[in-house]
Image (cartoon, rainbow, N blue to C red):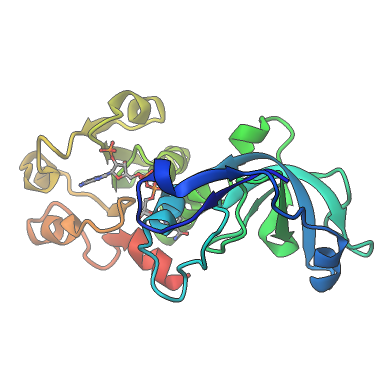
Length: 257
Ligand SMILES: NC(=O)c1ccc[n+]([C@@H]2O[C@H](COP(=O)([O-])OP(=O)(O)OC[C@H]3O[C@@H](n4cnc5c(N)ncnc54)[C@H](OP(=O)(O)O)[C@@H]3O)[C@@H](O)[C@H]2O)c1
């Protein structure tokens, strides 16, 4: 089968990625080996997220760095080609979305081996390309929204509102009827279209220094960038009400698994 292989970590993408056309197609033995918990999926679309770039950069810790060469691409949408007969969740022909997480058995291939407990039926009303995005960033956004315990009327600051996680999260914040601001340097129109009341360009201004927000401090800051500790400064300056729920870092979510 055809696939894209990565031959080295941290290199120039144009040099380290190459097309291979003679990779072995996964078959029944994989399904048997998986004892009913794996299936073979014909990949229709594979989405690449920040997690994929971290893996390609070689920035995972030693436990997670893949053995070379490997096929990148964590998240896919595709059609089940083979699954254990006794599988209750899936049958041949189902269109599914799945993530393989930080494993080197990626979706940039014609076929992928997928763990059934990492898969779900794809929604019928969106395209495979759209569906392939669902298993990763929007789920992280959902976790962040739940952890933030958003409620109607909250004032929320979303750091990194334009990213994969942030753009999903903005919609959830809107859904919770909170009022909110989002930071981005590249996609103001996107953040506004997803419901942000105000968009702040973090390259032009430090939102936590803005005196106007002291009069109406935030209830929660959700960090979808992953490493911004600005919420602490915001709390110190009285721009954020509570330091306890104020810093929800995606990095912390990563650590929590
Ligand atoms: N726990 C999980 O399962 C999980 C899943 C997915 C992601 N994550 C983590 O969540 C974080 C976000 O992932 P993502 O996929 O949404 O990333 P992404 O698509 O690359 O988005 C990054 C966001 O951060 C903003 N940003 C970039 N540099 C910045 C800076 N110097 N200061 C302030 N904002 C900056 C970007 O804004 P502009 O480009 O508009 O400037 C964009 O809004 C990452 O740390 C990722 O590892 C965790």
